[in-house]
Image 1 (cartoon, rainbow, N blue to C red):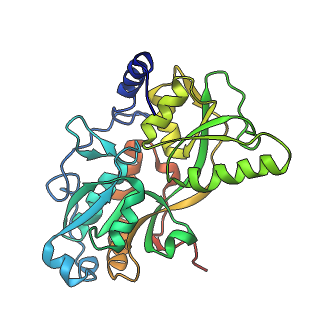
Image 2 (spheres, rainbow, N blue to C red):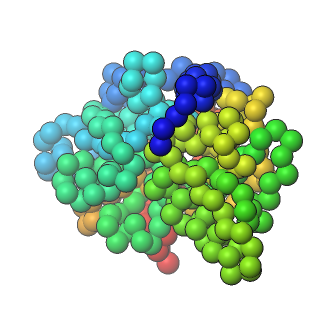
Length: 301
């Protein structure tokens, strides 16, 4: 799509507000460095968890991780272009529990899972909602629960359950773009109403900018992302109702890989020693924290 000069300038102004650190309460000071010596520097190795690692990864001494760093405050970039966010800090701490460092490989969101199954990445960390369909490709180690939450312009009256005829911005290939909004739009059409105009963008920042700059009537994203976006441009947008359809986030590994059990054990160790809760609280996202780390929760029992 082409952008005129006036709109592009406005986008740049709003984007500046969306690239700072999380601000729900205290101001965390995340580091752009990774693994032991970075965000995992104070984490002790859990020998039992490390013993579960596949031999090739243990020998390599690092995890190659695919990430789409455009989803603040979960995973995004600092001024130097390094990935930061609470999910990055959690992943660094998990790797440190396993005695590994982290090697992040920025990627488009829709390319991460195929790159895991193709052997390019050991793990995918990019706020993946664990779904039965995705579990056909990869295994998920579940580490958080997030709902869907909408935002609207200040003073709006958007109802996520009745958005027929509205333009809703969203990041492409997310659950909201592929599942939630198409289903709601179909329900509108089946009821003889106007469909939802799904305005999709490559990154979440662009989706938020579209709402803040008046190109969309509403925005749909995972609850921590929407809450963070509102906090960054609170003079332009606000929440449109509470979070709904809560589902697990999962770190993705190749289907059947023993790495899943090692990651599960390392994350559970972080939960048990309090590191997990500390990281979430620093970023103001503890509402979605869990006490038991599971695998493939979407289809479990």
